[in-house]
Length: 136
Image (spheres, rainbow, N blue to C red):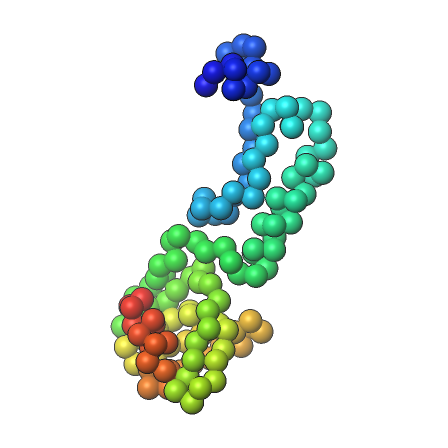
């Protein structure tokens, strides 16, 4: 790190830097170097980044990279930290829901209202059933 790139660094001391990211560390909402942090009201300078982060949380856009099964007992795989996706039935109806558990025969989802929906693979259209099976 050269002093030309960071002119406020006149010594070899460590200066703070704050980076606000999603849990998977795939999206940066804001990064703040020493001059921005010095003598500032943190709520004020971080507000835009925190609002963007909160919007992603409420829209369920943040995905945990460890979206893996908690358990795989009796052929049923349970999922945590899933994201909302559109799932379609053979009848043509679509629901935005999170996959919470699945087996070769059926899948259980939770919709945006918190309602649990259980469907057999035969009730799902081919594309939705294939997405469920790919996660087993």
